[in-house]
Image (cartoon, rainbow, N blue to C red; front, side, top):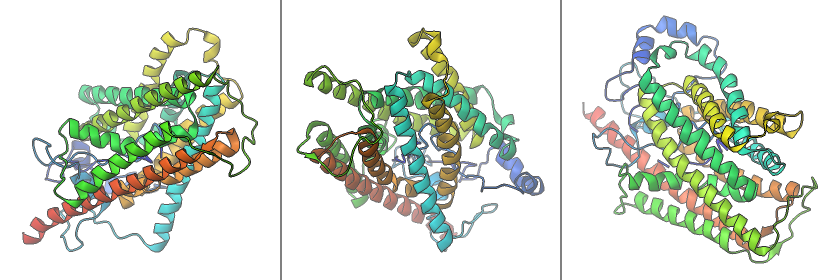
Length: 447
């Protein structure tokens, strides 16, 4: 919700260079040629994002990535790149040569940051509801992926040419392989599985799993030993507590219904989905949908890990997004050809199908991507995830009001527990980032 992350947990090098001294070729050339760099971005309508790791699929803010200043990567995903991106370093720390020191946001800019993130959440909610309607009408998930990724690539490509015209020279076989893997995990597996889960369940239920992506990334990092679980400190305890609360809240939503709540008029659009044959069939659909959505969360966790590697070899914002969308469209086409044999189903009609793919490609990947990139550049990757609950609440309310999804007491209690757990996790993560920033600033002050 790209989604809005929106919902992600959890590097090493700054997106445009190594904080320990080394710079990528394109960045070195740019810094050595300030006149040409100024000419390139002179009329930029938006600041060029400094951290490209934004998920173009649902426009989710990236999970904080595993720290990479040690050869083994066996430490917390509190990262040098995130610290640089967040600007949480001690104010007295001297700026390195060639490093632009970020000023504190003004009151007006703080308001704009909040409004931008609310706008991103609204875009993601619209994408979820439109996709639910289109999928329920019979459109294949992979057909949606093919067209929306194609439109997204076309929408972001002009920005890549304008802002990063020199970055295409950095593309080589290694970059192509990482882009292929990035598209496979993010655009095909993660979004494909998510659409299958969305089609089987509801928009409100599926939005819960977008909030679990940080937890899935955190667990994956622990399993891969890219992060240590520091239970001896309060941030580590809060992260573990937040993860357990999120998992418990999800189980509560899935297993406990409770009394039906009549809070407002429902199903204003007169939406009707083909009902299950019986209660057993409905339960089966919910179980299958939950498995699809869990698979999507794990795919997103792997996607962020792959993207972290891609950023190191190809520190681009717009080229990476455009090429990933293009390759993802081709991959989805290859898979879709085997799943959808009827050629008539591949034809877009001038109805909800066309609106969904254009909306997802232009607004969800285009406009929301720009807003997220700017917000992350100004406030860091933790700030956008604080707005995840906005998408969750909006989706739940609109899904009930417009599509008639019933709301039970158990789902409300489970959602509240998930929100509390998510903020507990983010508090622990943010505290780790600040401590890492202070630790980085101390050697600079001593020097």
